[in-house]
Length: 407
Image 1 (cartoon, rainbow, N blue to C red):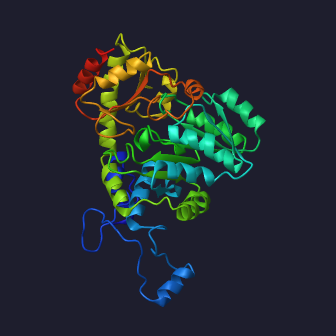
Image 2 (cartoon, rainbow, N blue to C red):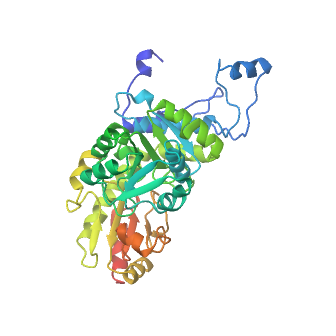
Image 3 (tube, rainbow, N blue to C red):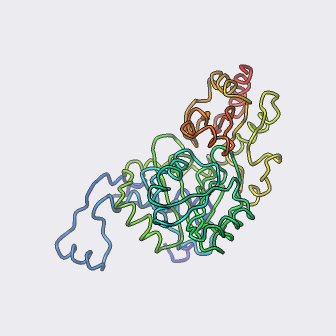
């Protein structure tokens, strides 16, 4: 391959398939699974050379594994798409999204530091911020939509802020936050911006290009896409942070390391992510427009609807509006009757699968929040979250229409 061919900048769909791929000497077309805990050194001189830093070597899979590195390079390439410093972007793979989030945060903050975040958060992340981090003298404050004026005031109030943390679109309210504006404000106050990009995936949104310092993913969701693994990723262009923060230190010492097989499955799923996201978004539009016009649906939350309060922001920072929709059916009982009437759609937490999943935050993902906490986050008793799959859209709509007759 010529040097010119090596530096070709491929489009997203090609990058998702080819980035990071390794063909072993035996000619395996699909990257092999290195299902091993430890690696053999050739001789003692090889060990000494590795110890002196003269050569790189795989030693123990809690540290590095070739199958995991392929997945990391692919995710990094997608998140860096279109960036001038794309080569500086790297990714670290974890055994869960929460492992990635915890490491990303603890790689920046320490005792006495402050974090500012939005009011509504993924349930487990909410518990981390509310119940765990304060035990280590890390304080948290929240702003409902991280609006610019309120964020400026909060950063002035807490000059020890090290992180502004956001989800956009947010789980499960579908709140949209202006990433570029938030990054500008955070940086002006010496804080880093960490963005959970799980709902959008790197196909629809690249927060690093918008100014974010760190991106986190639950690779369990759209990136894998088939409901077969649990995993997470941290992505950044800050080499020192990735080496000494969530990467070589926290992942190795914390032990949140995925198996080679899980990485292999995730990498296989990732190859079809652009294709899947296209159909997810096509279907979501059909479903959202149906729900938005249905008399028994009080409110439909999808960034692609012109009625969404931040539709213009979503249109500016996303290439499409995603597969996640939330609806308010007015009451806890109505939500239950609706869900009991579904047959094609599955009742399950998680999201991003090829099939449509439906869950009720008040009784499922956010059940452990207090009533006051759910209310503050906009999680009403009748809120239902839908992860729209890639089935035929007419079949999804027919199932939802039938279930709505139960209300």
